[in-house]
Length: 231
Length: 172
Image (cartoon, rainbow over all chains, first blue to last red):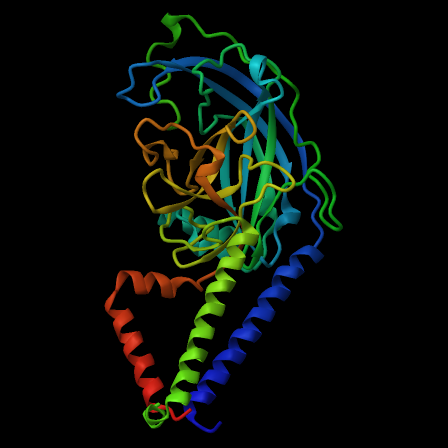
């Protein structure tokens, strides 16, 4: 028991045990901090369905829906010292009619990544925007104000379609806000439908039902859509 | 070990010990595989397509059972492209339908466009069985050793050489 190799082994073993226990405590601390995110407004401001090709080499044209929306949300309670980033995304969801019965369709129309100040150095912005981002949180290790989102008539990032190629005049479409909290150490968490202890569910995350309009006439939309999902 | 070569019983006991350690490690891995129902329950992030969330070298813990709800939009999943053995970690952005035949589309957070180009020829969407797990937990940096070993194969020889040297030189 006196060789340096055994001592090295013991030290390393102790180091990993301690690191593991600390990581477990950090992960558990996430559950102790309360979360109460809320959405004040989530509504569509403009709806359009156009024809476009999925790739430049496709011969088939498909229908794409462009859903512009306004969003006002307060996600500041999601930012703790263990938060690396919050991935916020808005989906459009609608039930399928006919043969699929209760099947639902969901597609992300817009998303964004909000980094916590401790992870700003990892974000992939250019040097000018990165400087601006770091200045906005100067001196603070946690910045809950980053969780305030206010968008007016926001253009969607993705124009969505259905595998069948048809999306015009779909009924009962709703927008829903989601978030995904990525910690430095621990479990990933999404928005939940029920309250778990100190974590409250997202209030007001569903918009009113709306229907997608019919396809516009050819004259108005030729060349307007370009390639489908590439925004 | 040099001294035990003359004593076959001790050599056999050492060999058995070595075998026991190897098989315990193997069974722990396989056991975890069975519990999570994933062929590879712990993966290392290889590319930067999910930055800034996951950096190269981070370890991801996967879970492949849909106990409470189906795989839905927004989850981060690991999937293999048909006929290729490269696991890709991306987020599900679209889902059409429900059940095992639901069509899923994925996209990396750091990529401008979705994964349609990565799928096999003629395949526009994934289905549930293409997915080998959904990310539940995350440990930073720990997996970087694996990446270094894969990208610099001479490191493997060096490590094995050092281990062999250590075993030969120690007395117990």
